[in-house]
Length: 330
Image 1 (cartoon, one colour):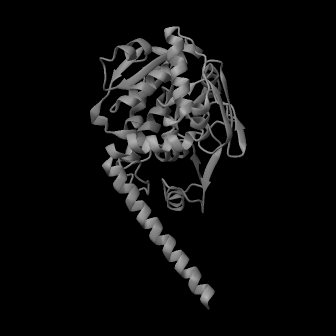
Image 2: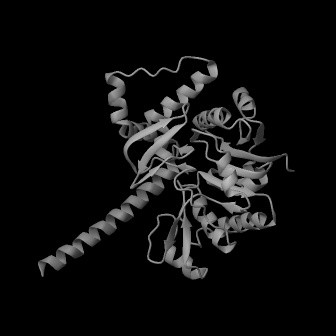
C-alpha cells in the first residue's frame, strides 16, 4: 500500500549501535530535508526516539533473512511511490530533494560511473564468468549505501530477479559478504543489466564514502559542508556514508554529537586541544582499532571467512614469489 509520494527508508536491527546510527541519520535529514518522509525497518519497535525521529517504523520480517539479504526485500518494505534506500551509517549535510529529482523517471538506479569489464578482478564476483554466462560486456560497480527505485512493474520484476539470484548466489560466483550471505551490490548490479537499468553520473554530489580519502576530511553536518578528495577526485556529497571503519572515526562521532546538541538546544562550539589534535591526526587508526574491538568478536563466522581468505591469498603470494625466485635463479 502506497502511503506517500517520496521518502527514504533505512534499516537498523540487531546491535544497538545500528539504532544509534539510524537516529543520527534521521536527525540530519530532519534538519536538511524536513519535507521528506522517513521510514525505518527495525526489530526495536519500542524505542521512543525512533518513534519520534521516523514517520514510519516498520517491523523487521525475520523470514527475509539476515545481514544485507534484508535489502533485497526493500521494495516490499517501502511505503513510498519513490524511495531512496539509505544505509543507516550515512549523515545528510544538505537537502537531498535534488537526488529524487535527478533520479526521477528511473525504475531503479544508483550513483556511479564505474563498470567491471572482462579481465577485471573483483572480490565479490567472478567478473569473467558472469559476463560470459549472461552474455554481457560490463557490470556496474557501485557502493550500495544509496539505492533509488519507483514502484512499477519494471522495478517489481527487477527485485524478483535479484531475489532469484540470491537463492543461487554461490553458483553465480558471488562471494559471501561478512560471513553471512551474498553481497547485495553485485546481485543488484547483475539485475540492473538484465533489466536495462543504468547508473546516474552524479559527479560526487549524491553519496560518497571517505574510503580512499586523500588529505583533510572537511565536513560539517550543521553548516552544510562536505568536501574532500577521494582518491584523485574532489567530491561534495549531500550524504556522507561512514561505511565500515569510518563509522568509528572521530569525525563521525563529532558530527553525531553536534546533531544531538542541536536537537537539545545545546551549544555546539567545538573545543580543540592537544588531545583532539592527536585524535584527528590518527583518526583512521583509532577508528580501525575501535571497529575491530566492537564488531569483529561478535561475528565469529566472519572471522573464519576472513582468516580462510587470508590463508589462501598468503599461499598464492608465496607461490608467486617462489616462481619469481626460480626464474631469477636460472
